[in-house]
Length: 435
Image (cartoon, rainbow, N blue to C red; front, side):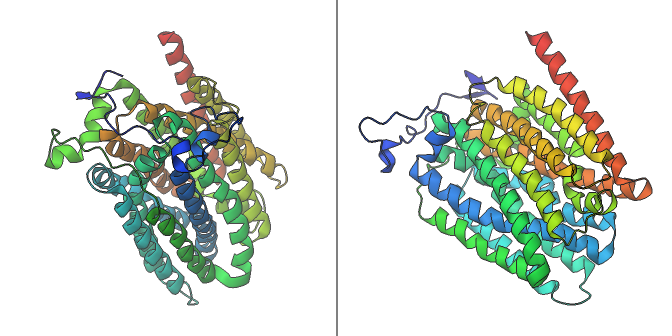
């Protein structure tokens, strides 16, 4: 890759772990896994252990997420409060991801991850205790959710920087695809379980179960041996080092375009993800505290799983740029249709398509960016990715909530569809100019 933000980007890390070195070598006569595929990444022991631990933990996270949105809506009947709770959950990514990225490029990433998981565990327990009462404090609920979100903001840069490296650079595309897959597979399982348990054991029980699931990922992190972070001792110090990711984005056109596109997409196209209870109740006639709503959210998650895993399987050899352009166009059409629906049953296949297009697009963009990055700046640059991907969504929700109350939730969905269509046209014209 030559130079990257003034750094020599030749890979000086230890050689990537081979499948055979993990104790999972192939038997004689077996066909080797193609490097870069999901199967090759999953064959690496340390990656597989952490991947399974994260999957178990994320099931609990999505149980909590779907119940939290439904609980907030039923408690207040206010889309604005639902948006505020979502902001408390995701807003810390915007506020603290840069700090998390600096920590990920400076200290032991595994220790950072364990501490961050413990913070989220304690925040979930506090949330469970709060909602036991008949009339819990709205402010205290937001505060507890903010604690969980802060733990996630410190966790996320170290996670996206370390986990793909567990599989080795050659298998990074497959590892990124699998990481997105487990996150979205948990969207299928978690909401389905959460929807059933919400009616049976209440919000407090669901939040407590989520706290327990953090133990799975903590245990997995304690039994693996991740490669050490490559620290650039000659780089800037203090505040300049904190803002190192911004310097990379300013000097590298690929990084800059990827982050700008993702920021616009997240800010204006994704607020619907935090307003699913409002969409279900006002447009589709579904109660947020129902199995039908849980299945709607799970169907969206299933589409996201298929979209994410496609990048490491049957679309592994396809142009990522073409996948992104087509994905944005399909997403725009499907989101517009979803906004205009007033009957529940057609919404299920439509949200399946939305989920697939959404995560095929984002996973492709993530793969291109991570394969481009040098490990010494990976944590700080990926903290900007997290700010763009997760941190700007709550800003969009803060706008979407009042807009939905003043007009309708349909308006929020339609302006998101228009922006996605615009991004697809922009991506196509950029590709034509570069051809």
